[in-house]
Length: 286
Length: 310
Image 1 (spheres, rainbow over the protein chains, first blue to last red):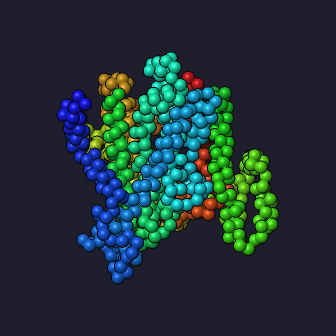
Image 2: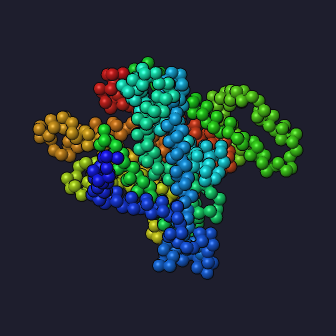
Image 3: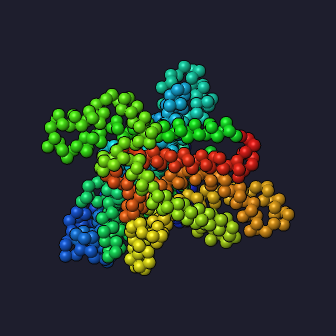
């Protein structure tokens, strides 16, 4: 590589660092998000305790140096439970975003590229889906699919498909009429090749940014559904479930609902802040 | 104008029909039909023949397009089937629960418009950069808060620590305040976001410059000139926001143990009572379509330029 590390990669990285350092909120969001990701992947880094086994003697203790977030009615350390819950909750969020991105993106791609009656049908379905609030759509899907973290994640993802399909379609329509696609077509490249080599890479920018924006929404939907009791069955820690468990002690043990909820809110805030930065950068690129 | 009205009404009917069809496909064609769930407890005691008899009586053995035609015909006459949990008609149950939820969501919408509008106006009016920054960051925070958590925090502080308002139930106006505030937070954040953006756009328009040149005060420019034009884009959001508020009531009514559509929905999903879930989906689509229709009809009244184009 003649362009080299020192002349291109380094200045770009320095530019990114300066961009972040000038924005303390963004920096804080990146740190918070990195911590949550680490907690999800390596819970052992943060705590040695068992999220499922408590010390009954120490039940319902308030926050202290020993138990950062206090303990629950069975004497389990709440911080440990929140750390372990992040793995299940984040996994569900990733699944939801992936489902929305892949299914919605493909629908939009096919619909925009081939046009005709297929496009009409897909877009009319998208219209209807957008007339039903997403949370309700995922509730309906959950009542059809059944309960559990994965099913909740799929339901949340499918409920967001419409927006992705619409954005992808608009982008495909823009790219389809561009000169390089016409050139590829004129030189005899088949539809499949054009779709995969030219249209998909050039049209996927906006849906990828949308996926980042979707992240915060998906965390909220997944945790709302698990708060309502449609996610993981009881002893397994999940963010929404932790808040629901603490609900019975809301008058006596404030920490049981406050801390897990605070972690959810902080994660959503960071995810939203980061995706807004990504969105802004994309606009500047144009 | 009349042709426009007829066309819009037709569109509304098509969306409702499509919502019915989509929910029928999702709820009745996916594995696990409601009756086998209802009979789930009986599997041990009921004989194969008895189960088949009940299936036959409920038309579950008919081909799917026959079932669909039956359901659609019934829905057109206002019959949305019977609830698998209670055996009561779905339409009646929803109508009975509706007033409680309409009261709650109505108060929430008023709070959202006042609060969100207030924040947006203050943010665009103030000359203090720091204050503007703080006000403009409020909506992003409001949208990131899980509703169930906000509700529980309010219960903790207002009901238990201060002993001010009831933590649960449907009794009296006091019981509406906290759930309505909880619902209003994300809705108000959305209003504030959109209004702040359109106010900024409106304030950069030439007519603002003209008004300023003619010596109009800042308050007059903001309220009489900019706000009137800026509130139109915010109005188009009304259908989405009211649909969201209606559905958020599933979470909020659960947190505050209030009776209403939200609790009904949560219980229906919990029991996989598909007829009831479909009823709520249709209700949400109806609300969306009605609000969108009203906004579309109001638009030419509020903005004469649109009226002439129709």
